[in-house]
Image 1: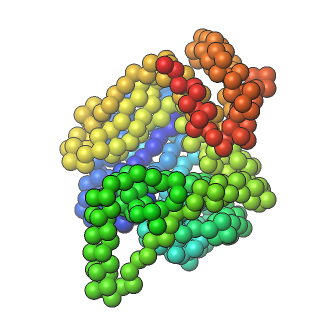
Image 2: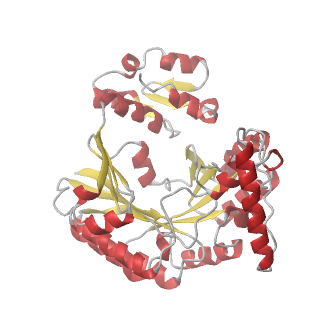
Image 3: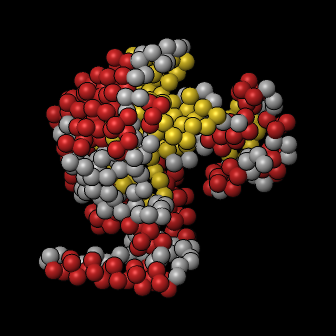
Length: 419
């Protein structure tokens, strides 16, 4: 049977983090229940649509899925199991934030079949967590970690973010070593990106010279004036409430960020973690199968608000309008947007730049099997040029990034875009 991956989107959180640009927002209990009911309706519509498929992985993400009640998560999984064929060995992951995990919830998730948990820690320093706008401190993470291990969860990921405001090379080393010593099976390590539309963009994307890193350029005087007014207003409100006004430190400079990036792999290797993808490290046998499916372009179905899917050669996503989703979830065609039949050239591009994210690289034979042309025919001169630049290496059937290629991977991926 064909493999099918499921992504289930829970668009709720207790509070938006300052750097987050995901489709998520706080919501009351009534709204959450309405959404779960709508999602169950959507899932039921797929009962006979994938007769030749077996679900190999399920990933429940958000948002913060773990703010849902135990019965709500179980209702979603009950619907999935009733309407899809599930591989008995399926990897089933739920994202969790410290402060939202209880023993009761863990028991409910295990009963529903969850066998992998991804915990959003980000930093072991409370001042950095506060700067990021996280809802928890490090002790709350440790409490969650203890509950997860006591519940018998043996496949756990921890998310970390580097290059956050005020972070030093030493504090990043502390975060890496302290987290690695806990012994999670998997670590996802990302460098902070200041996304437009987030509070961080307000602080740093348009920040005055003295509080932005050297490589962030471009703004208007009007924006600075507006930003200064907003900050003064916020400080006045904090002072009136008896709170100590937040002082926003600068982002690390480019050299510090580069050193953080270089030391991540070196330090994690000391603790037995192998880098298997640009931002992901795992103990032997613990690589995330769901994410590897994305990079290998396996078929996946998104369930819920704003979720994306790739079925065959068709890519589509669901509406991000909650009212439309709640009203029409029972008819997937009515919530489907941006449906696109992928041209062969886009499939080839994705094969290369998604596959090359993995340290194992891509196979020439698989490229030929999928497209009926050799990699050399399609990318005449590109492979040779990148090898001469020391960014790619070819060994028999395998093409993969070198260490230098990983460091400037965006440049490498751009070379595989077909005009």
